[in-house]
Length: 500
Image 1 (cartoon, helix red, strand yellow):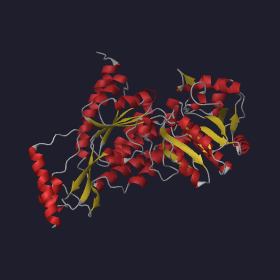
Image 2: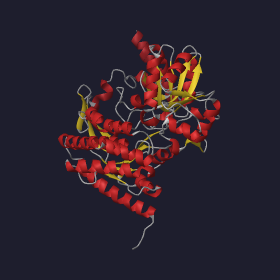
Image 3: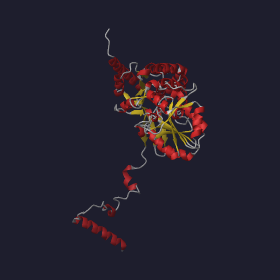
Image 4: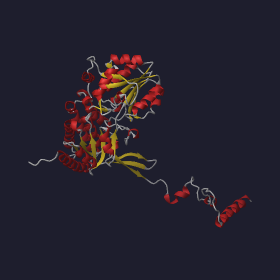
């Protein structure tokens, strides 16, 4: 039997999937709202039914996170998302302004390429498939090599559910042989109209460099500021609940805690009471050597791991009930490893004198995850307004970063693709949703008579009288010829005649 190179097989599979996906995209573009809703309901039901099984497979395959939390993320990406978008207009006329004589018509973009991370491999598939089909698009997925099994399982499950409800075959597909060559083929396939990239900086950069429209999201490095008016017990509970949610694998999760001198003791006391372990300087160094490699890149072996697992690997004895490891940091950047993103159960800890210092420190921390998210715990609205100016696309108040940033615990759109805006080199600053996968056409009726447009405009006076017609921009050392003199003389005569 002839054996083909893995890259060649991956490239061929990518070509086959995009061709079939384009055919499916062309067909679903003609579907009605009722047909789309039936398909989404079927997908939601299938994803909900297998939410636990997909979570178990994801944890088993990647080693990241917790089954119960991944199950809830699958639930959020299906049931909660469906409830939120089911009445959203994505077909035909989606808005109208009779006063201005305009209306908007939505059209699908076609075949979408979804790049999937290993940290949230099944929930991101469910989410992207749901918003793609809501907008009458087809979607093909490129999985992370370490999560290909669970990613493809989720995609195949959703495809079967969609097809059973009337969607074209191949509407949702996934590479089964993920290689750089195969992914590169998908990125540049002529059939692909738009890319949604969720993953590492390299993959997001590749998406933006493909020459195609792309929605890419960057890394997060969210600071959580516990301001002096905050309910410390509540703030700490929310931070720990967020940081331990799926063991910190969501990019919006807190990476640093900032408190003030006036509430430092209360914050430390509450963190210890709720499962926080404050590491010594020596213990912090040991943990940092485990967490980072090649500078400040996260070591995949410790992504999404329990605090006790990390402590044991570092040779640190911690109480069995420890939920997060906390290390004090004296600065940001080079030499302060915990000031960088840590998608696991480890937090940096800072103390400042006032909100101004907290503001400056937050900006410094956000430089390593600029444009993403920051959290604020306060009962002072004036402080909220001051921090709303920070370089983050989501400023979360009195909630957890993981649940708040994704819209689960806030009024933000439920999403597992969080834009970072131009701050972070992203083309979108919002939580990505169905509207971002649409071409919006504008229909505009004429409101003014163009044959008499100039004459009818009372604000336009140029050229309407001989006097104004001769007015020109001043120039230096202008030479006046005989014609100019005669024109000027005529103007003077007219002015004198009007005075008599």
